[in-house]
Image (tube, rainbow over all chains, first blue to last red; front, side, top):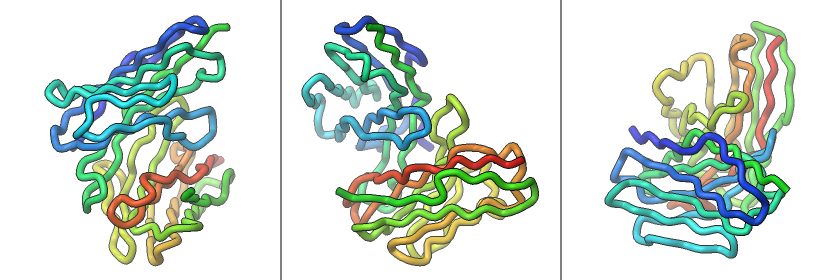
Length: 115
Length: 116
């Protein structure tokens, strides 16, 4: 089955700096790669996603890049703010929308933005 | 947008008793429901996938007789933790998806289960 690895496990940056979180996946059949932000005790919030037919996607300060050949994807947050502090999870799904579409999560990154 | 209501948000139960967690899709038909468990400072681990009207498919290592999943309607799925033990204490969260991937993965708000 699919396995998703995520690095780093913790990341501390100064306010205004950029943060980058990287994930690798094992199954080349995966075709959907979302990123979630989770605050303590809350549900994961989708912040950006990318499908396998796209190499990069950007939404204001957040961007995601996908390298299908290398089977890795990354989250980039620019101009970080203290409210960006949270745990971030990458995830991968095979056959999105089809019969087998379970979402497998990475191990998570605790991002701390220092004011 | 799509909403999934999950109840209860918190529950404390005695060891050996059973607890039922409900997830309802309020404004769409959830043909598929995913159930996750999250221990403190860990990731969301998929427990099982259920399709409406079918038996759930459990991930390796998850006891299907202990974690009973029912998905009898397109708007309701339940997870029952039977004979709960302290090691079952965790954050349980559901995620619903409509037909053909519609509405994406819509998460419930989670249930904090504490077994004493």
